[in-house]
Image (spheres, rainbow, N blue to C red):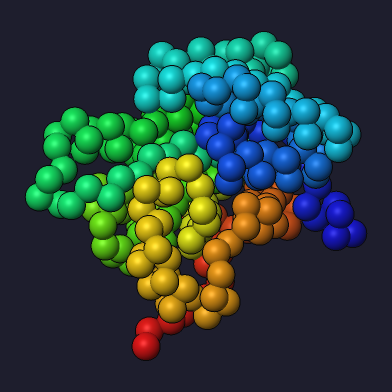
Length: 257
């Protein structure tokens, strides 16, 4: 019974950011649950490494290169997936970039780059795939990657925090809009997980502060996001979950002093 609740058998999951560490782990989890996964990103080499692991575990998937900051690129992505897989059931928006630049030194170019990747790309993907879901009456699941900094102001990552705060708001708004159509939209909120986008931020002093504020006293591991991501995607276990911000943070958000 529990396997059926979390089964994604027969479904196609498009994982934007699937060539990265966190969303790559989510893609592996989806494949293990029976979904055909589409890894979306720019690095074919990283994608192939992940796809080899998926295949070795008995899963199925493929890679599509895409500039997710452009609507035309996302429309091309959707068309290719439909041509190759026949449909899409799950969308994960996980592309992201970060920067520790002090607030007064943030340039317009850096601001635009972060907002374009973290916010605009999610907005456009929800728009492109959302229209497909609505027009074809697909009871789909959209999982947007948020951030602890999108819930609680976090020092040194000003533009990143803004961009993720917008993703959180968009997700709730779309959940309200599309719930009558059976389309669920949720936000997966990682606490502190070492990943490519935050390596420059995680200097020793900052790591010490994070550990002091995390009851479990450690970073999360990518595999520890998989269960939560499965819950939000599965039509069995997660069928009545929408507009939710599912926090996976080792107790960070429960800590005060």
